[in-house]
Length: 94
Image 1 (cartoon, rainbow, N blue to C red):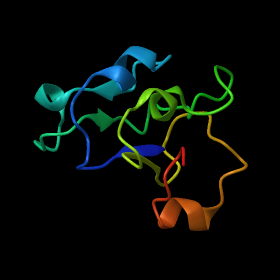
Image 2 (tube, helix red, strand yellow; image 1 turned 60 degrees about the vertical axis):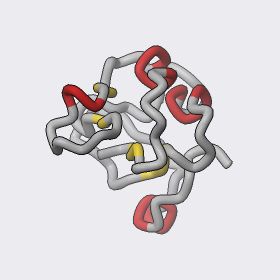
Image 3 (tube, rainbow, N blue to C red; image 1 turned 60 degrees about the horizontal axis):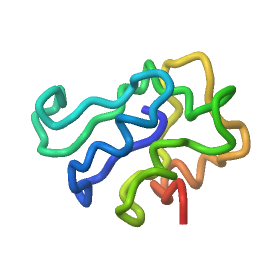
């Protein structure tokens, strides 16, 4: 993973529309079977090289819905996010 969409997700689609690398899928394509959107960690680049912060979290209308998660297998991730922020699943945007 890279960012994580938690169960407060209202399935509005704002994050999907903003993802520059198409790393987010809706609940119908969530491989875990959960009723929330899902971020593929091998695709998510945390918007490095695209935006100043993850565009999905900026677009999300639900406060705290998108949080930091472990660095994924994708080639890019933010160096300014600590392991503690990731392990605590702190919100990407406050």
